[in-house]
Amino acid sequence: MNEKAFQEYYATGFSHCYGCGTSNEHGLHVKSYWAEDEPDVTVAHFTPEPHHTGGFPGFVYGGLIAAILDCHGNGTAAAAGYRHQGRSMDTEPNLRYVTANLNLNFRRPTPMGQVLELRARIVEVTDRKVQMDISLVADGEVTVEGTMLSVLLPEKR
Image (cartoon, helix red, strand yellow):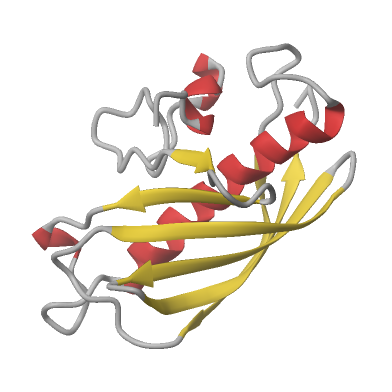
């Protein structure tokens, strides 16, 4: 992928997030993109480090999973919001979304030692909200799935 990740368009004041902020040197740096073959789907890839393990050795910490899906979802919401307004992500005013609701179902333990694929499928976009289905795929299997609602931050907050 040669295009910029959604998170790379965040204004400096919004790029400090631990999960996806490009300005956070200690962050996870989640980077989300439109899927090449599905117009309403976004993808991101994340490789957990050994210290990201959960309570059971060899599997990813559930809180980390929630964090990376949250960041991927809000990046997806930003891209969907710009598309809904018919403009590119490098235009102003900046659109930044935050989580209103995140529901996750952990279907099976997510194994360490491999690239995880984060997916979001946009269900609905309005002027203020983006609803999506989200999932995490490890070794070809969905290990986590859920729903997310992101809301647009007002310009003057």
